[in-house]
Length: 445
Image (cartoon, rainbow, N blue to C red; front, side, top):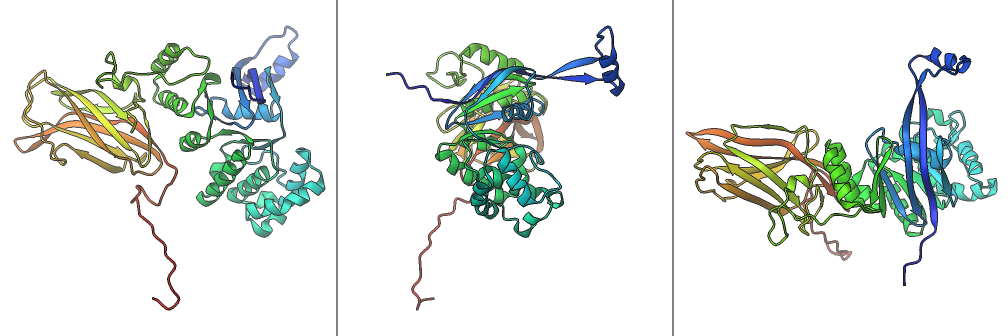
């Protein structure tokens, strides 16, 4: 029997939002007074024909670069903005946490803002008084709740705003990037609470640049770019497409979407490049996110012409799970005889600090002398113990000639690695500690 369709909590249909842009403030007045209806403005499309649905009980993420329209669509859904065209239907009581200041009167105290926002959401004063204790306990801002919110730090403000949004038992919770303002402990507390209400069936719509949260929590992801809907589908695949946008690989992205041509995008069954038994050869670098602005140099007696990242299941991807095995693969072509080439990789953080790396010389995998025209495939397989986050991969083919270090081909920051983690420890990587805790007898040391 076909699966029963779930009820729709949010329906967005052909939503367009246009802003009028004027070069000078006086142009607005000129346009309003013009008898010939001359236009002095240019139309800016913040959103252009966006459509998607959010089913009841789903957690849906909206991702995209800055200026893609993520916050605009949230404001339209919550009623803060009116669309220029299209319609939005919402079935359920919304609690929204948008940017700092939204829905709060800065001259009111925290308590006054709690009751004011409760009234706006349709709750009586008595109902809000019943919820007040939970809100204050969650916010943990003490007596500041009796002070005007304009005196709050950004951290206190977001604590109160999130405590209010999360503790009014919403049918639909909408969260923008405001959560990122809080400290790490409060963020962890918020995510635990979000997981609780997600498990209870609350519909959640979230915007965040934290791809780990997108992967962990979202049932579906909507990808926007420059006000347009690029695709919607599974979290992992949408994040992969998003990485292509960040790397400026729009042609590769458009080609992939055309090849799929599905109502809801699914992961294509790529061959995996040089892997055996997988059909025709396809370059690995075309199937992952490669940095279009990478730095490369060397005398080119060797060329790294292809590279790939493989997860524990053999999938080509920039997304790796902490604690699982993964493989870095390089394909190198030689245009000269070389006595002892060395193949390397390095993983750095976003600040450029080397975190880890190795090479065939360190690993004792000495390469025999190569001839002009030879091709090599080199694999480094290891366990991912870095914390969840964003990293950069570099690789090279080098060697020593007459005691001098020679670079044949080096690729700096050639690809990104996104590590997804369900448990981050302190620092850069996880020591994978084995923990035991035993209650001791009272008379023993």
